[in-house]
Length: 635
Image 1: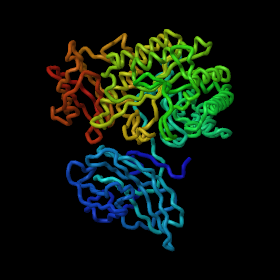
Image 2: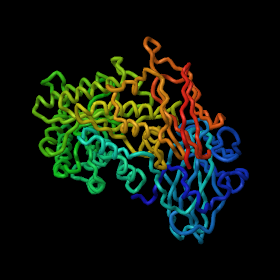
Image 3: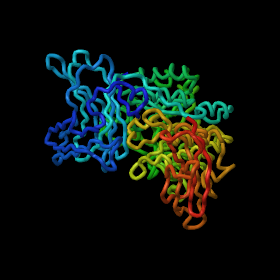
Image 4: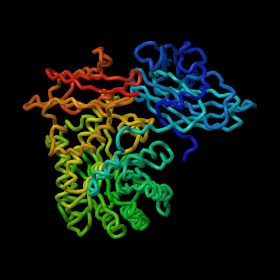
């Protein structure tokens, strides 16, 4: 585990209760009390009070306006405390709430400048993150050397780019383990293991070895009955160059998965994200083929007998360009997302002209890992141009006497994907269902291997739209479990994990609490309703206001509703929607929604932590439709 553990989390009761060593942490006594600006590398900055719409908490926040010279990549600005003394021994936890004013994805970093009694200094820094207009809480855990605690400065570094940053609620405390919030209701794996005893459906999560010991690992075992160890089994990690093998991370997963009674999908394909050695433009076909054969053979020989844990393996990945349908190939250099394996050549004896590396990878996997099911994994959307080629590839491999057990669709999508169409004009959900049907009809398992629902641009923070997309996808998958095996796997666990973190694409917030998307999936699993039985779940044909869940609740609950599509050219015409909450006296407590929305399923989280226990009512108005339901807050 890394010495410095960097997490993005929200405040917890444990953290707030500790002694805070930062002077003027909420900037309530004017931003200039206890704080000062430091700029270098040609940057300039101004520090002033923010009292308007961008205040994060309390009456004011600190606003730092940064300007940097054109094309100067080293100019930086730090908002710094005055020196802090008399710090205790042990780990320290530094936390701040931060946001930008209007720009997206501006760089930000937490650090400490620590000084010893003789005046020598050391700097300890967290990883750089990217802020958006949505407030984030950023935390850095550090244990400075005992000789470097004579005086400590907190630094909020926000330079490199012109922009305006907002900071508030800065905490420097002793570090204590935080309790990870447990969602209401049954755990996802508990529902699946109880209600799908025929093992036709699995719910999985992906994470990496660098998240061992973090809340992400705890959630992985708690919520999912299978694990995908992200990139730890890929060639770039295990076999970076000829004669070199690194098995530590891969081997480390097996006892963990066994201990928590899970199974594993070994994400170990021949495809992009291979080693820089393989991507070197000077590599010959013979060198690449030997490199491929060494890796696949060693991998399969090492893990074939671990089939009590390793149930599936991805043999090839991202073989086809999702937009053009062409075989995905190499690019110049070694720093691009590319697939050098096509250099080995193509099978020109058939019209499909498949790259030779695909057949060779399956030959080796069939021979050396007969105990593990073998999968073709594909990225992109639902475009026919790509999936028709995947289908032809499966047939080609089988015609050559090779075993293919399933196909995988990664499922990296954006919120609202369920209303979009593929290249043939077919709705994505319909195309997804058709693809699963084809897989089962051809004796193939179907795996959604890397599902994310991205929030970006105007959708940042729209948890309800994200929940609706997760729900729609899960409903389609569950509707197909009677005809064959279906698995669903989310890529990364918490919003702060992985490269896609700024798009907050998963089921859990950075503090480990469940988002509306989690409860949407949970509800679908509990209801086990498929699109064939109740089509309104995906394409509503009437207005529905559902009972909030959970109910009674404390302190938050989710309210869901459906807006129907109509027939004709304006089938997805938007309607003005209002969702409001009232107390038992009829007084309006909150407006949760007030905007035009397209047909679909929506989920809204209502947080009542500042309200007393009692009976409350929520009313949905959508066009001429009006409906009211009762909910109970018990504290």
